[in-house]
Image 1 (cartoon, rainbow, N blue to C red):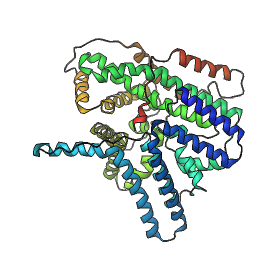
Image 2 (tube, rainbow, N blue to C red):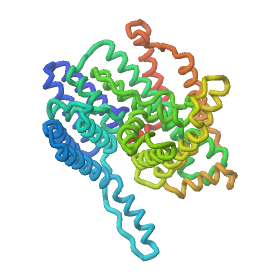
Image 3 (tube, rainbow, N blue to C red):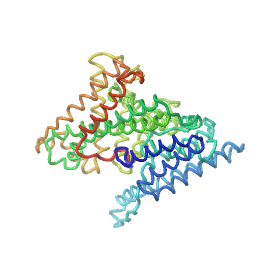
Image 4 (cartoon, rainbow, N blue to C red):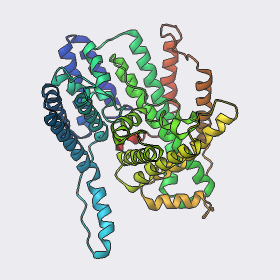
Length: 465
């Protein structure tokens, strides 16, 4: 169920109505769980069983982790949870990837294994990572287990962020659930503002840029090198507005219910280094990879070479998390190598102080690298990626010309606007939600979104992960 749909509007209205009628904490939790199941089942009801399996298994394992005083037993239960969760993720997301990769090796011997007819459950990468972090944190005694199976089920299935994040930690969500749903004018106003700005990002900016990028990445050989360059640079902006737009809308819906989600983006294209960029882009995933992959590998505790290798491996895994193809492995590897090189050449120097125009030039360099690496992220296969790079390198420069003006405009907005927000740090229209201009501004945002929406709404990019 898409946030930008009449079906979701009906679901949200119904949920708010029932939550207003039933005020007992237990009933409200049940309503949230039921709404989340309806939200998820709208895509494919058959995969609700996976959610039930993962939820029940990890809840009872967390109880055993707390009650058991035998470290070998605790470790065995942790490993069982990790094995089952990763097996589920691996089967649905990576089986055909490994079959295809094996076929490449066996091709000369005349073997060809058939692909399996496997449907990828939407949002599986997100909720599997959340359940893994829960069990690991309970095992480490960094978090208390949920007070009831109902509480844990609401955490796993909470519909605003179920299918595309942000990836939430139980230690952040469960205390809010225990406090209870809080309806207030502040929550409604702030929630509406978040949803409105996310809607603007998605249906006005991201979906408009999709008209260019979908065409360029579909038939890159048709266009001139300059058009392909424009499409490549535009996609970095598109994916940012698409995913941060979803995160904003998820934050807005959660805030209507009185819950706060973690910040997922923080002006990433104002970053002066790739290290800073990954601290500002998809923050919930970056911190997850740091805490559960990079640090367990050894982090920065064993010298510069081992630190860089750990970082490279983490980025490879992060790339593979995004998708089951060599394109994503290469994308993650490129960022890992770039971070490695950045650490070598920086030689431990402190980040550059803000200066003009130096800060802007460094940010543009980061943006350019991110956009070029995204060729592998966006291309459906390596053949298309190779055709795009031929155009970028002016090997085949001729082709149709198409100056897509919105792309140039939105690229300026994301860079110049981001720097304005970071340097000036304005309080914004909603510094005080009680001011009389707040409601008209939010209404104007919704009106602007629908008046200037692109011709069609494309699926959120991160739904495929």
